[in-house]
Image (cartoon, rainbow, N blue to C red; front, top):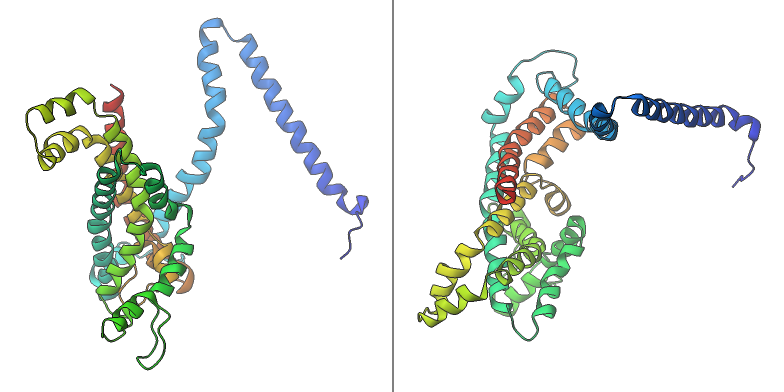
Length: 326
């Protein structure tokens, strides 16, 4: 390996770096000078504009421009050279393989947020104020430290299949064989394979729901809990008439957050099945169409549709936060 530094060869790059630093300093100097000479009434607005400008520029470059370009590409052909109008969107809702992707995504969105919230809430209620509460929460939160790709690899081994005459290395098939059953290729059998992938997502996200909902439960005023107990409320009545209504906002936060995360899901499906056997979701199919099959227009149409699905949920979450602040 040659580690010699040739100053002459690197001189153009150094000059460009120096010019960049000088330009940056010049812009900062001009802005400070303008701020100093501005009338006192306008300084606050000018100061705010100076501080917001970099963030707005980066937002435009990183979000607005790509979103506009993707929307334009969704009306173009696969190679992005010919205008095809709504053909890509018609393909999305009429072709069997695309409809299967949308149906699978719908299953994910319908099940994952509800299951994650239900598991997290149940766990939070069961471990609340118990002796080993901290340890229990730490254990259920541990999967959050694992990436989706890592979790997918782990659970792929759990679902691993070997022929009946061979020793099973997959935990699930080993349990089935131990009870006298026949090993199965769990990830190859739709629609069960989608449910097994959903189980991975629930395993990862249940810790997040537990932490958020446990904090909300601890925030319930002790007077309300004590009054309910004095009135003779049973544990079930306490849960449905006191606990659940009191943490409604936290439950909605978990549901909304999980809905957005599920719509964007890519890693688990890509790692475990590659989207085969009717397990592909919108994000995975978007990647396949745009980068594997060279159908840029179809990939862009899927991206736009995904953006349209996420936008109402984001708007709802923003409104909820504003109401909470008020």
